[in-house]
Structures are given as C-alpha cells and as structure tokens.
Amino acid sequence: MLSYRPGDTFAHRLDPRSKLLVQFGLAVAVVAHPTVPWLAGATVLGLLAAATARLSPLAVVRSYRVVLVVLALAPLLAGVTLGPPWFRVDPALRSARLVARVVPVLFVSAAYLRSTPVRETRAAVQRLVPGKAGQLLGVGTALVVRLFPVVLVDVREIRDAIRARGGERRPPWERARLLVVRSLERTLARSDRLGVALRARCFAWNPTLPPLAFARADYPVLALGLALALSPVLTRF
Image 1 (cartoon, rainbow, N blue to C red):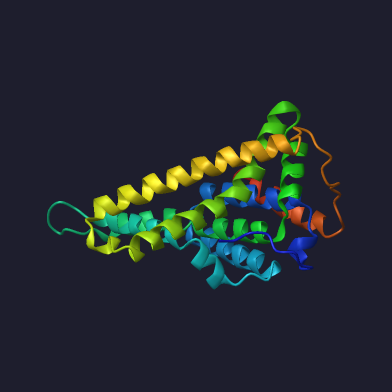
Image 2 (tube, one colour):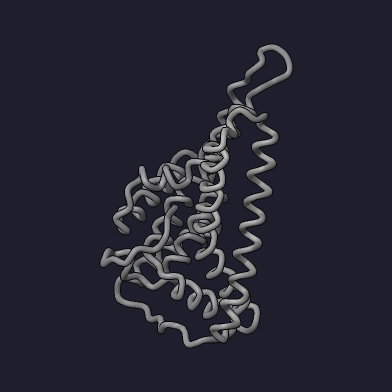
C-alpha cells in the first residue's frame, strides 16, 4: 500500500496545494476529453508525476491492482451480449476508453501519497476549505490516509489466518462471511481505540498545522493544474 516516505524529490518539494490542483485538473480534463490523444497525454503526465516522486510504475500497479482488475472487467462486461454475436467490439472499446481515464489519475494520486505528509495534506485542505467544514474535512482526510493502510493489513492478516486454519476447504460464501465479519470487528475495535487515544492526547479541531508556502517550482505546476481544470472552456476557443 502506498504511503508517505520522506525524500528530497521534486514532488516532495512541492506545496501540497499545487499537487492537489494538478490532480483535480487532470480529473476534469480526462472526463471532459475522453479521446485517444487526451488519454495518451494524461497517461504520460501520470507517468511523469510518478517519476517526480521516484515511484516505479510497477509499484503503482501493484498497489492499485484490485482497482485495475475491476476496471479491466468493465470492457469485457460491456461487450457481452445475450445472443449472437455474443460479444460486440464497439461497446467494449467505448467502455475501455472511458475506463482508461481513471488510470492516469491513479498514478498522480500515488505520487501525491508518496510525497506528501498527512499533516501537510490536512493543512492544505483546511486552507482551501475555510471554517468548520474545512476542519472536519481535514480531520477526515488525515484519519482516512492514516487508517486505510492499517485496515488493509488487518484484512490480509485475517485472510492468511483463515487459510492457515484450513479455510480453503470451506465454501466461498462462508470464507467471505468470516473475512467480512472478522474485518469489521477489528476495524470497529481500532476505531474505539482511536477515539480513546484522541481524547487522551487532547485532540484539537484546529491545531497548529505546518506552514505552507509556494516555492518557485510550484508556479509552473499551478499553471499546469489550472490549465487542465479550465481545458473544457479553453478548447472551445
């Protein structure tokens, strides 16, 4: 699972707000322009973003393998018909082009996760969204980023424990039930411990967050993100 690692790469030196703008702009661009040239350019941008964080494309694929497998099934399901010819190519290609929009966004988000501390993400969110809404969104984002990898580790441990106890001989639905129930139990227990830990540490809704400032390298990135976000309007002129 991808998570923050300290480093001195180009992506690490960028302000989190500029990186968030690029993610937002890329998502807008690929949704507004689901054409092959735009998808090719977005894919190149996603690979460049991963390279700026010194993140291997194979590591991104491995981390998002479940998401990518689900996305890969969409064109197959779109092409299946209930009668002759049983599989239609045009709907499958159309679905594949739509699904491909997600891949570059995943690469950019992976570079963001690897190069941005959770505290800086929370600081960026609370500066972009003022008031209590920003504080709530910042806290929620920080907790999700911190806890989601831990929850995935718990699920893998429970799955391995089921296999070690001969679970492979049980029916699939029973294994699924055990995995879901045990995972929920452990997740709820973690949430209870988290609540106690937050109260013990005098959790504050508005703590002193790390200062954020745009550097010289941020301005081209901000311009790129803004251009991507405004691309549906700019391409009309």
